[in-house]
Image 1 (cartoon, protein in one colour):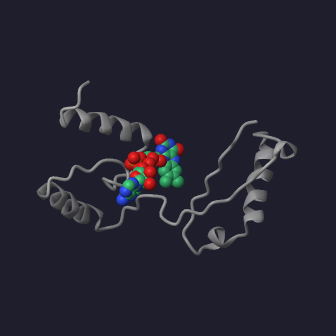
Image 2 (spheres, protein in one colour; image 1 turned 180 degrees about the horizontal axis):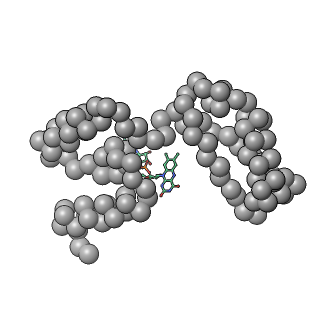
Length: 110
Ligand SMILES: Cc1cc2nc3c(=O)[nH]c(=O)nc-3n(C[C@H](O)[C@H](O)[C@H](O)COP(=O)(O)OP(=O)(O)OC[C@H]3O[C@@H](n4cnc5c(N)ncnc54)[C@H](O)[C@@H]3O)c2cc1C
């Protein structure tokens, strides 16, 4: 057995968000089948999950608000790390690099 995950980006409340699980599964499985990614007949189990706050969204006050939070965290001696900790749109590789750098800065043994 193998597993596959398809991600559809949308806004809470829009047409995609409100579509039925069956319609979303059909959309993904139908396209995967037509494109030759995998065969419909091979699918044993499907599940849909909706995540309301999945991405860091940059708005016009992003920089100002982030500077405020960073300055506050700094003041109380809190070290921030990660996509949601730093509210920075980074992927797993960057999270790991930053975690290693922070561990080093905090004096962890190499
Ligand atoms: C929809 C989506 C798709 C993504 N796709 C990719 C991709 O294709 N490739 C890629 O490299 N990256 C991808 N990412 C990004 C990747 O998942 C993140 O960059 C990475 O997981 C962030 O790691 P993190 O440690 O910052 O946060 P997380 O992985 O979110 O870890 C934070 C942890 O802290 C826990 N936590 C939160 N609050 C508390 C608390 N008060 N007490 C104790 N624990 C707490 C949470 O439960 C969670 O386990 C994606 C992210 C999302 C949301």
